[in-house]
Length: 274
Image (cartoon, one colour):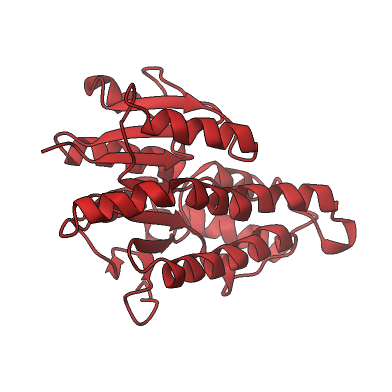
């Protein structure tokens, strides 16, 4: 039986790196094509664990906001010289910045946020849908095949901080895109993932007070308190990464795992974390 071929967009750091590692360590033969702007292959980098699993990941450095980069990456991934097709797609690229009050916001900066958080997954979906439809036809009983997983955020509707308008509105648009894609493509599985606050470089900037003066003081202090409380409030990326890996491999179909939220168009409600 041919191995599962998984394309990950934005998997070089944070949750993306954690889920890439989890996929490869949980599956004996799944192959990963990762596209990201920069990929650290060093023994001290976020993907160091994969040094023990040679020939399981193909890394391709490119920019998801550049049309020909996206097209070239998808074509390369599906080529016979690399994976030979695409069975599953995971989109976890995302940007928080600009952190700016609306009165001071530069629209070009906001446009870039939408390029990564909204137009990026839309374009990747357009390019990979033929592959995902074919994968589902070939393996209709395997829950990991013919699936697109997109990481959004609880900031899409529930959370608002001063200066976060670009991020919150782009994630709101992304959530609606996920539901529209699932509605229009019933022949594949479309799942949205809504991680809780996760210990990534984004949180480091928040805790260090990088955005003090834009965010309200009490909001900055809140992140510092949560950081001091540990994993109870700021999850390690491995928690969400493992859950998304299970979704991708068909080991878990939706609902709740730990503190991470999932949404599936085929599940009637968005299930809340505890």
